[in-house]
Length: 263
Image (cartoon, rainbow, N blue to C red):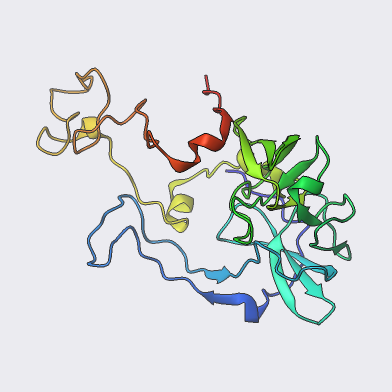
């Protein structure tokens, strides 16, 4: 079992005004039926309200803490602005306590600063990128991820996404400079079943261990192959290798190169 290095985090309680309750639904819908399997039983958490859009425009803020967030893979930073208000933002790599950051139309190319994509030079790494102006960052928010500015063309900017997909983003959208913190998250090994239960992951049983009435892979004497051309879900749908993206998705027109398949 391996964990995350928390030595860079500030030893303090979370900001009470920025916390709210988070109800655990355990994979159930509004009638109480399980609609998503293998969920439930995790430890209690409070939700940290994150300012993804950094709405305090043109107002410098100082980093007063780097904190752990149980609801996401990256760390978060507590920012205190000149009007004494405090906000949580996603913490980028190399951001330190005492650093100043700002969100404005155009500013210094500095880790944590936020500006319009049209003002960011080609080759710069960015994160927490807006898809539509004013809606706050929607993409490139997970631990260690970053997108690279490739080119400015017309009213669009071309970004190389973490998946190697190249897509167009409107130039009026905002993005933050740098890469998301906790880049070593990908190397964490859960190590034991109990830790998965703390995270809300319930056990999953192999279909081949079930009876024929319970799963398409079930039945047979001893350990049998599934006996099918493709693996299937309990409801008979193809489980692996099938395309799930809508054929006429609205955002297809913004994709220049699709992401490369993992080998």
